[in-house]
Length: 355
Image (cartoon, rainbow, N blue to C red; front, side, top):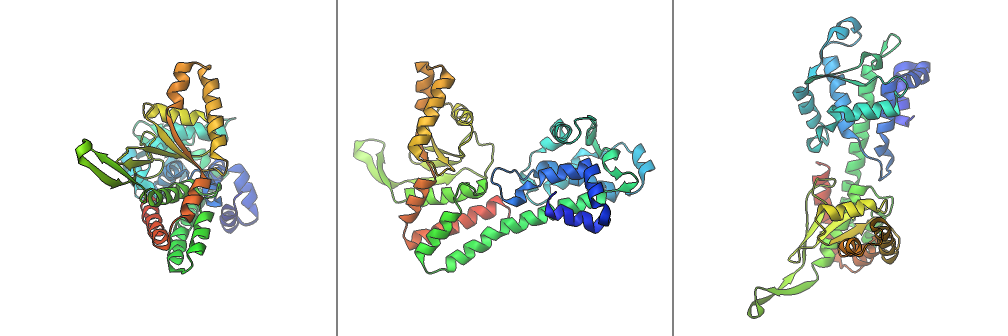
């Protein structure tokens, strides 16, 4: 049980808090879905599922169903449009997809919480939705207001976490020692870094690194001009961008930020962009040569060692960049570039988290 959930349960139910927790499928589910406040970069925020539940709870209270079991049993549900608009109006809700209102949430709930009963959390009645009454009561106690407090506290803690980096960046700009600034930025791109923050900071480092490189390009040999390399971020993290996180002009290079996990995901990224070469920016301290060797071994096994498939995937790997390269390039920057990098991080961080 998470500490903030325990505090809320003790405040609402005193010595009975453990009994409420162990007998509430809804509170247990919320406990499992609020892990992002613990700082694990692989833990999703789960706001789509949480806000779907939150909208139903808020409308349940708003329509005077609290402790009104007999009336709620006759109720046919809240309109989807109202619920979805409510979800989108919440913190971080404007970029959510509405998967939580299909059977995905119910399927997960049954697998994690209600496997023995197969009793769904959300009742879907055409275009109307409502929470199953059995998850709103523990014996005769209506727990809806407690569940709302848990969700609201979770979002509050997320906001505090999100705003912390912005405060740190302001302090960074005020520092005079460039080496100290670099040391602090390095701590933000470790393997345990939050995935979205890692993507934003790696973009800022790569942008600063490549802007110092130039190429010569032209329509013909008589019209050759010198151009600096410029890196562009394609949008927010986790966007449906077909496997492109950054794009470089004028070379047209694709960059994908990822983690060392199952290499099948890397091949999927290659397939999504029709095997246009990708530079993988990987959140790992491992040597890039080791990662490349492992990736090639995986491709050989996956392809059955067939030359046509090996060639297709090998040629899709343009470059491997790890934390090691990012730190090296960070330390090559001068003070002005470091300050510009910090401002870039702040800009994209605020965009990402709607600050």
